[in-house]
Length: 262
Image (cartoon, rainbow, N blue to C red; front, side, top):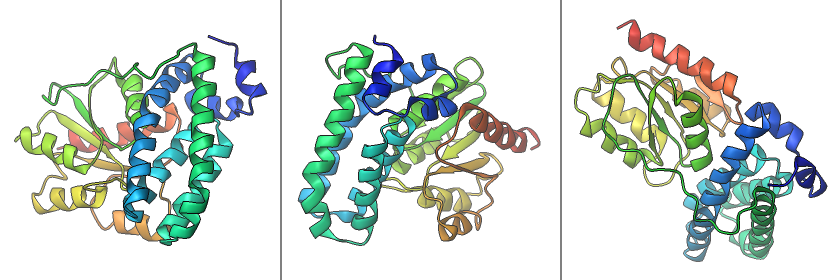
């Protein structure tokens, strides 16, 4: 593994990233998730672009933007942000004209990360956790592998952490554990492919599960309209991305208090 000066010399804003991750060891460990996660994300982005599915394209470039900013790849983050804006506006001309630039910048970020970590392949993957609820369980629902694994690392010694990459997986976990008594809180992203966070919130509302599964929203979509819509449901709180370990611990503590008070 190279020194962090290697990152700085390649334009990575490592100091800003360390404000989020707290220390270089946590940054390094979570960067491995970035290297594992991004190739599949780029593949899906390309697939959505080829079929002109701008809704799901926007969701994934939004996720790529967040991940890039977490790790200090600011040029990639800005490019992904522009693609997010233009795809939401259904501007296929912009997406097509600038797609290769986005892919090249993403590959550049991956090359820098791999060289820094001293790995040559993307075979390192996070272990898959089962969906059996154990004592004191937190459910984390986010389409970013980086976010999911970051939160897992924070609470590894405190709670069982179940993860879902979209609302469909989250609902499968919830419905597969009928009494949900051990799920003491859920952190839920809003902007996800397949089934999004609002559909999960609607399911909880319809089945009167908010008291059993206190839920807080974690989102990079900080529009006033979306936050106001989230608060039409009896959620505990909203945490905007990017966030650090202290922020996550605070919102989890607040969320679990609601469960323990029941």
